[in-house]
Image (tube, rainbow, N blue to C red; front, side, top):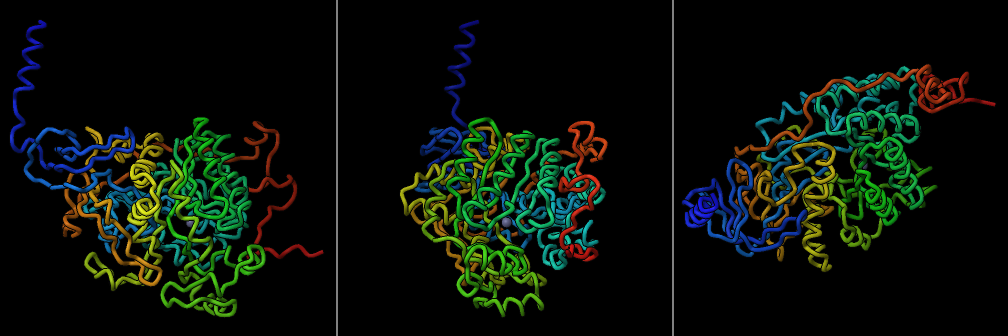
Length: 548
Ligand SMILES: [Zn+2]
């Protein structure tokens, strides 16, 4: 018995690896795994789309990539990309991204399946989407029904009316909103995306609580643009405290979207401490001092942006297409012509950026925006011919690696931020696709980004936001080479859907009886108003303001 085991061991050791044991071999790269802290020059053998071996021994494959002098890292995961369209894919690859997910705005609940179907077999990168809170509100409160893209780019039209932002739903409407979102969760949506910061008047604390209750029933996250973002340091922190208090009461996962705003230090501390207590909560940043949004965002109204926050339009609000800064008057004029015109919003000193990349556990979400007009954009549109956009669209990930290099931030930390820091919490939510990504380990899916840590850099600027990053040489998605020597390959589309399996509904209709029975306190609407009073429908066109 013992002898035979010994013989077997000797035989196994003695048999050399046959040529072409693997589909692909990445030779002599510096392999980095943020989960185990493995960091060594090694060869990576890939078979059937998975990492079959990481070894210092010589191995052979049908195909070989020479990675001498290069870093071999888990493919970058962008959890906050609003543009998952063919014309964006090459720029994503040039920036090392192998998975792009729209988890902050997301897709319209009933359209989840269709959203995924459009991309299956057509994308070089993995793709996924959360269920949109604001689109459910647009359908119920504004009657918006013209869904063309089924996700973020539809906002250019759905945001023209104001009910989605400013109307407080009554109980029936609240249930309808939740039911639409529930359809998307049944269809496998990653979680709920809530842009409550754009709906601060219309969305009550109760509504947010009910959203988190619903996503929690599925074990999935809410990804939130906080109620007071962008705001001052206290407003920002109060915004995340709303989300985290609910997460603690309900035990449901939560993501702090782009907390690269005043108050970030404490937001980070809150997240770290909650994780220390076992809650699955995390945050993301994009490494730029300016943000980008639609000109009619409620937080850009003079009462908030100028009066409360002390900003001047002339210094802070720049047109993405023309580069001109707005004044209060030119803003008013443009709102009449094109209310959802895209602008850059300067909101924090540049010096804060390095701080964010020093914070362990933080993930990178680019917050890339859909490009407009997009009628004639294709996979092959030259980078320079794409309409201008915030540079975070194209450069976020290479920029993190460059800033880490220039500021002596450990490379392993930067690698973790670009991949593992999203994969880990999403995997912990039970999302199988993310339990096997974001790691350079045997058995993991071979989504791999290979870059030169000495030269990698972003090239996109505020003036030209669609210039590709450089220094990222080769990218693999699901074991297939999709970019070689900085050249994205044509017609190679191994991208997989990142989603949950379809499940039965877990939505429970909210009723006054139900609330009464459980808590002896029934709100009349989604705001927790006093029973017997009228629902508070702020901003609704069919109610007059109270006059006394
Ligand atoms: Zn946002």
